Length: 273
Image 1 (cartoon, helix red, strand yellow):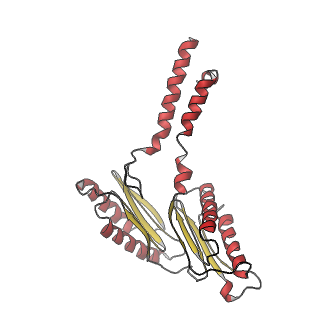
Image 2 (tube, rainbow, N blue to C red):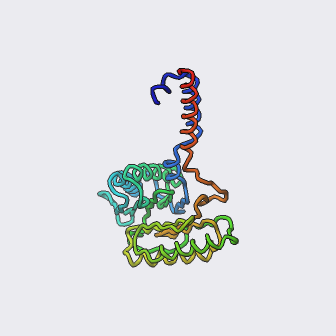
């Protein structure tokens, strides 16, 4: 099959490549989709030990992400004072490979550097990873403040979907795990805590996030609730988080390309025969 395709006129190969170019790889782009970013108003003076510590923390996040999906750091280079200490952490979504995690964190660090350049603290949440650095000692500290939340379009008339949503969120509430996914029919959900929390603190944070999600997005097709140290999300399959329009089965773009390939292959085979 592939040999016949290679013998086809150049125009057909060009058309196939052009069609492929219309469908960008959904995995990498979605993992690096920006959810939120925040920069502290306090700024540091360039050339100071604090700047060196910030750079060291951010470099450590990227390097560490090559072999683990979570790590935290407290860095103070020789000559630094107590006020120059920088704390930092990163965490990738629990289902990411090391390669995807490293790529996500590296991109996040680069983007945070451009968006929060000179800020003494900053945090950025991508679809696939989270990074944060600051001069305040936030490691191991529970934070249930809302940093980002959004709800999808109303599906108040779809009682079965709403019932399934409640069942999924109920399942996720009792997770007791740092990362968990669940589903019921057309509804899928996900929760995750930052792993510097204890399991008890994680459970407390998730309970708060899910309750807020229920209250704020009760009849919505999807909902996102991000607190300082955890998040809870759900969506009806076919709806994309942080978007109001239906995106039915976008993951099957490759099937269209494959059908196109077969049609041209059989077309050229008819000429050969």
